[in-house]
Length: 365
Image 1: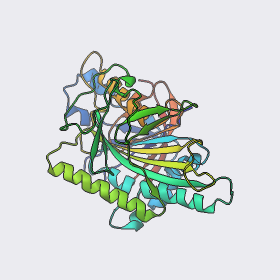
Image 2 (image 1 turned 90 degrees about the horizontal axis):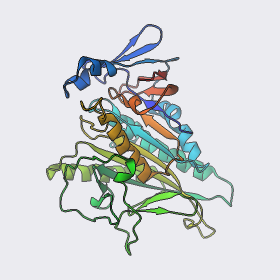
Image 3 (image 1 turned 30 degrees about the horizontal axis):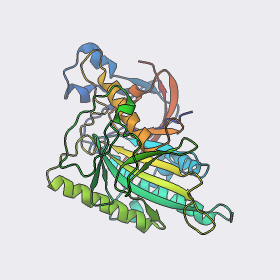
Image 4 (image 1 turned 60 degrees about the vertical axis):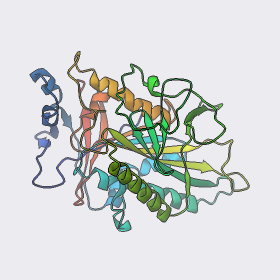
């Protein structure tokens, strides 16, 4: 069973920006197709496909990030302690409030975003645990998915390449704008590989068919200061990459939390399962090819890129067993990835503290 959750902006961050989401009568939201018209030459029929209507059943207003966290992610944090993995996709363009929602203000801890609040919630639950036979510790890392390259943002930007072959290349000479053209999500995944050091990217499957991504640096988190240092380090490394001329468009930042159970000596147990929560910041810049349609054979671009996102899921989480929390900011129709009809919760966030809680009815397309 999948938990599908949207975090979407109903209004622009600034009043002078054009509205792309309109609230109409009868609890209906109308999403504009205009963002696609500026990027692609779509026919009228294709344009209409992206003018989607969604019905909501309530609107609530929260005045701080803390209330927003409680509504959007607190339940997923609780599920970590029940050994349930989860993944949160956060979509959006620049100036949509996406970055503020995720990390808040790195210079002001009082304006902490979802990342810091997830960590704080986990640390508090760990400290309040009185069961001597159930000791946990929190680990965290940040990484960048850039087409077929994974960049470890905590280890000097060491590059780990994903390729569909029995080997994994370490430290590719340069970033390449490689387009993902596989027909199956598994085409993007590396096969199992065993290396004597911890620098290689490899998928390991244990006896319970739990898949883990190894080769990425995880750091133990004991305080919010630890989280802030990881976020600041990631931000500085991304800025260095930009100054080097690296085009990070179409890249995705993944913040990963691991809740590890400790053995009797206080060390992470090698026998007990690891609970994992990923918050994936999709697209660093304005464009997001994972979601934009292509005018080709009835718009297969969305399908292809949805599979690319599924490949990310398969790499960083348990395959096929996770509740997925999907979040959207402002303009991208991620509901195109969902088949059939259904009802999903939706949250809207903004820097001015106005946040909306709405439940959307997905209409089959």
